Length: 495
Image (cartoon, one colour):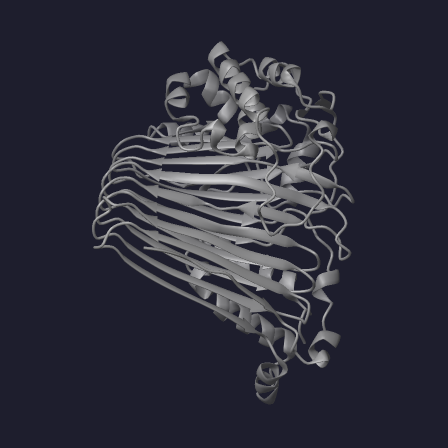
């Protein structure tokens, strides 16, 4: 059985009084848009084989890693920029980008006391303290700025449990056998245009390996920050949960409010062995551009997990509120029997933002199960698209999927599109799919007003209820921030 569909809705019937009261939030200042002043080193702009070799040289990589990069670059040269998404933008000029920029450090960096104080202050301002006195007690953080990791907290404490958590650059040097075994195994360089680019020029990112029969004793987290105006960020994250292990990973990101666009093209690979579990949570808050659509991050990301062993589980939870353009589909390959894949997402767009995001659930194992809950909120003149694939192969006996895709429109110029594709090749499989498009209108606001609730609190209540199924799956470290973040993003857009 094969089915696909498309539904598009434009909210043109909301009373103009609602729109007339819109706008306070959309003009609200992006509080992470500051630029940090620290000394850095950058290579010349432009992309060539010499660029790839220079990055590998600067990172003191072994020969096998350079070979991996060069093979990816040569594959990349045979590919063209994709154009099939709903996103509309000028083609990215890859020759105008700097592919490596890093803060200058002392030759031997033995402690955070030797890190430029401005770097530490940057992460303090972002709410990610790195110093021994201030660091979060229950979360290990890898702090990445532009092209390099500047610090990883709680590394020694995690090692006592056998958990390896460090930058991908350190892992390549210190744990080459592990990295060689898994790097590119889930997202090979030939997978797509931006995956090939990332594989050739990736600078830093995080690596985590959780050994057999181990529950990671704390949340692990990476915070990505772009600072340099002309630099793209191409991080690589690789997380491996060995047999019967469990780990929860948190990801956050911000960037300065520049009036030009910057490219962020990351690759994330998750590997789950037998009876293992990975929970991956993201709050994406890149700069989205001003209210006229000028500036902002192009967020083109490939995220994929593989449930290799029997009974393994991968869960993606994401809240997308930033980026001028977002293009990503966190996915799960369910290879083992009795495996589980989950995707919980809220994507909020405003002003002129564009988002083409969703997920893929590929069922190959018997009794594999997947669940998709996607919530899209469109305000201003933005466009929000959900694109999903549920594929059940012939050997996936008794596989089951449940998908729920809902869109909420605010204002009379917002757009929402849904493109679900379902492919079922096994007669014993069961698939459930539902979708809805709704709007916030004057009648709903009037109902709240009759009970003494003002417009913005009414909108917050409706948004909170709309997104609850996703927020409930966020780790506590993120969940308590989400109400404030959503209120900040949507304040004044109605009411």
